Length: 529
Ligand SMILES: NC(=O)C1=CN([C@@H]2O[C@H](COP(=O)(O)OP(=O)(O)OC[C@H]3O[C@@H](n4cnc5c(N)ncnc54)[C@H](O)[C@@H]3O)[C@@H](O)[C@H]2O)C=CC1
Ligand SMILES: O=C(O)CCC(=O)C(=O)O
Image (cartoon, rainbow, N blue to C red; front, top):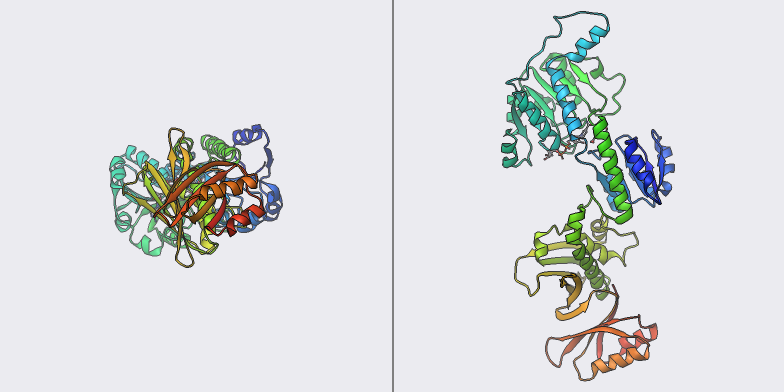
């Protein structure tokens, strides 16, 4: 396994990767886009911070790639959509740099209140000016926090310790969390109107781009102070520059920019009332050690054991959750594979229904396992849990999931149903049996059966006549095929019955043709689970 460390992550993180038997680690920092294309051609994993851009082109150039690991929070330098289409897991380390970024934000807040960087620069220049650098206090001022996630929350705690009133705007902020954090949840306009200091802490999205523009600034108090240690573009730079020049915005502190690195001739560099840092939020020894080791561990887990944590393009399952969900994932994959093999090729919809305990668990991962199982034999692409929903959609198959509260005869039940182009439904139902939670198939196309969900199966619909079991047994015996397990089911005596036969080996072509052509057999499917 080859791992490219494309941006500088902590030495401890790199050492962890190097210690793994079978890992070859290549460190290549500051590579040009052309060099990156060359470097990735045989890598299985790439570790980045924010410098290296993992574009669609880079992903195309990396056929072996399984995972992109971002040592940090924002994944804006990774084309997540393209990665998802290719089944590449994109993961981040969400909390390792929270404190570092909250502390840098607070440093900017303090420098916005007291012009320390400006005063320090004049001291270095040999001056002694006690009049030009008066400031204001944070005490009893209102701080508006836009985006009350991990970093916003830590900033709020520090602001409370400084005696500030904290108001927050975050559409996803639960009132209970706001209360616990002693902040007032308000609408954005109220925050803009009431805050003396405003700091933003959310990702850059279509919703948040230019959230603080000319119109928003007009709603702010004259003399407001603004801070952005999240992503450039949340505060519109041209609007901010104009407002800093008039003094409507008294001071600003920025760590991030619309274009990074910030242009040498950016007007921001020459304004006296703005403090700038070059995207240093996460740059503490502690944060880098934390995110470097975390991403190295996460990459190792994906490559060695398939355990995925902190993925941004699929549901993550940690070790404890995997213990609970593991048997369901296995059952789900098998049911998906089974249904695909008993159905016609043209499928309009794949419908999944859950009953029992599984309803209360996070079934997203099981849904993906079912979809992966269904696609395993029909998609030309490498199918995995990341790209299964995308591939299904690209085949024009509609996905539907229902969690049912109705009673069932089993503690847990999963039904996978496909509807073909003619509107006919084909389905399989499965459960987990006993302490060992063995996957069992308990229904096929509305017939109750009971057979282990593993190995090779022969699914037959035959006329419900005496001697059928003997005839099939003889036929398979003649073909040298041993029967491991068998289940029979009929709805109405004398009509058709279902026979599910688990066999030790696959019947040869001639025997398969003989079974298919048997006048008393209406349907014969050979299934490999
Ligand atoms: N300057 C730096 O070096 C660093 C920057 N960051 C950036 O800081 C930002 C926040 O990071 P975390 O707090 O860890 O993320 P988080 O995911 O914990 O919090 C983000 C919050 O933004 C909120 N949000 C989403 N859309 C919103 C909207 N339209 N309006 C208001 N709030 C909205 C979410 O509900 C969530 O509470 C991220 O963009 C991250 O990339 C993170 C670490 C270092
Ligand atoms: O890696 C870095 O220094 C940038 C950190 C950052 O912006 C993030 O984690 O979102």
